[in-house]
Amino acid sequence: LSSAQSALHEARRDVSLGRYTNAMNNLRTAVLKGPGDASFKKKVAALYTSVGAYFRDNNGDSTAFRAFAKAYELDPTSAAAKHNVAILGNKLGLDALSKKSYYSAVDYLEQAYEADKTNTTYQKDLARAYDARGLDRQGDNKLFEALEDFKRAYRLDPTNATIEANLTAALKA
Image 1 (tube, rainbow, N blue to C red):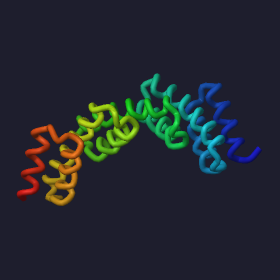
Image 2 (image 1 turned 60 degrees about the horizontal axis):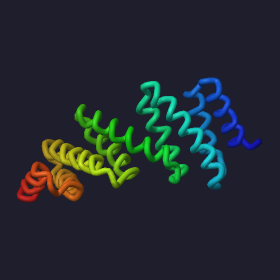
Image 3 (image 1 turned 120 degrees about the horizontal axis):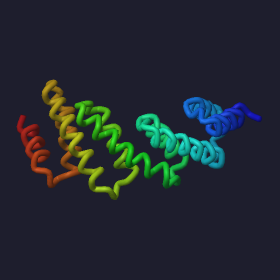
């Protein structure tokens, strides 16, 4: 067996034994050393999805998100990975937004929205995160970056009066 195949085999064994953290480590090795062919990537993605489901179901949302995001990266056709990236990305993004961790909020919410662009809630949540980060940047006197965030927020949700007011104020500054 190649080192990538061996790592994938070990990851499968880890999952069967309930050693999900070890499985994540072996999956990382499989990805790093593995061939770039779609068949291998799909096998690794399927196992990442299983590991993600375990962590999601056992209150490990951020680890679950990383597993699902990697699965979706390796296999963009995986409906389960895409669905979980959207749901967990939005959940983690809103949590980060409530904690005023604006950069993390934008990152998670971007991934949620990219995974499901049809969900207007994800779109509006992302707009709010950009607006909040814009206000934070404005407070740090990073006016150009703040303006860019307000523009992004407005493009995502042009009906939000608060976002429009923040953009207008930033344009006048």
